[in-house]
Image (cartoon, rainbow, N blue to C red; front, side, top):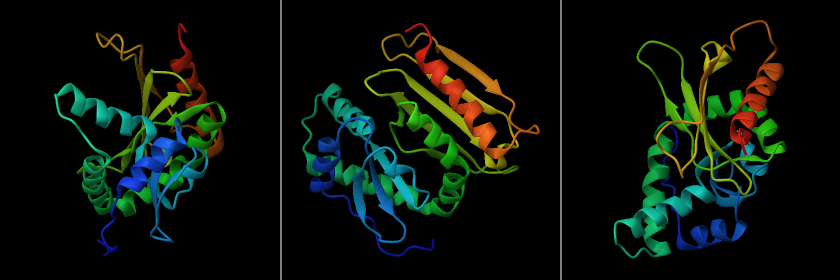
Length: 202
């Protein structure tokens, strides 16, 4: 693991993320080693490790409430510290994938679709790295999951779900992205498809 010092999340970080509101993310910066709550476009910097999004923080608090537990910001900070430790183990791979999806994330942010949680990084035993990002429209409740492979060599999977109706996904499709399109064009194609999925039947 190339980074020695532990990433510590405090109640101040939790309060700061909550104060930034929808679209914001809590991030750790590789160069400064600082934890910061930042806006949706700043969070796209590939050197920032996304620990959670504003919506992810809300969902953590809702989970505790549903279990009948009172939760303070100190408790949330401890959970996020553990999460950051897990993400840091995979940081070299996550950073490589951050570079891959920077244009995609930027196109979605420009369209008002923001990261709602930390990505999920996967390294199959046979194959190239994959990463899943989670997006919501500003003010929306639908969640889109976007799984891409390194270099777009594997088809991109896009699903969209409505938390008010979890019987089946609104959208579940696979998009071929290994053709002759440029990286930028592929990113725009995926972003357009995700935006359409989040807006479907609204």
